[in-house]
Length: 80
Image 1 (spheres, one colour):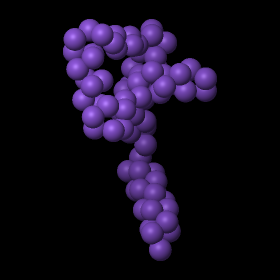
Image 2 (cartoon, helix red, strand yellow):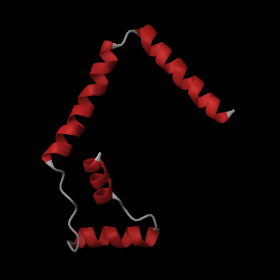
Image 3 (cartoon, helix red, strand yellow):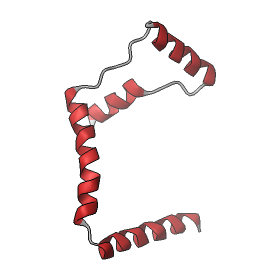
Image 4 (cartoon, helix red, strand yellow):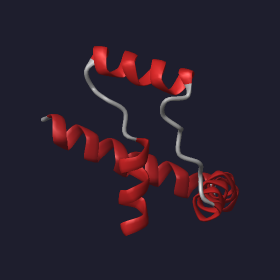
């Protein structure tokens, strides 16, 4: 969990439009270096890209339908 938090802290961009514009200019001019992705972070991202399609292949159409139905019920429960 700690590595996830530090990753989010490093990738966080300013919310204010003026601060964001300055941040972009600073990165473009080389005043601020963009953090490089660690090998561990890269492996985790690649595993996520592979995992979704593999899970989709493993699920039967009935199970996918059941998951979608439960998700829809959860969404509508929040709204109503």
